Length: 111
Image (cartoon, rainbow, N blue to C red; front, side, top):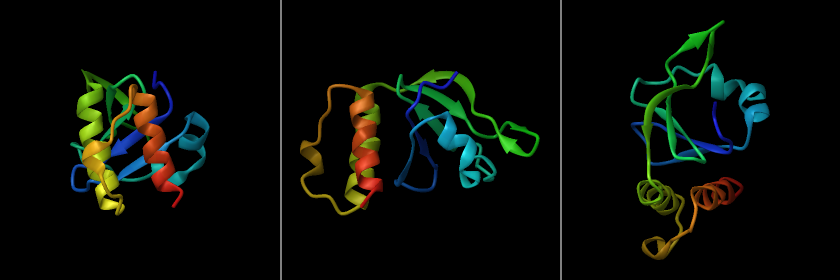
């Protein structure tokens, strides 16, 4: 079960997609009807990684792959995302939790 919020990491892009909750996942057809590459993934606020290639009734169902990412690994992704969005001083970016790191992604998505 996904611990929301979560981010989607596409293998060919440093930009991350913030997903606030199950309701947003279910209501945003671009999220669950999209054709994901086998190396694209969803990372939840616990650091658990989900593959996005399992389809049921023509929609993507995140499926845990048994792997996880540490806060430091997620911060690397968030820093690259922030740099892509034009933020400065991203090398100094730090948060104490994965959830806080995701809030940075959310705030950058709103601009």
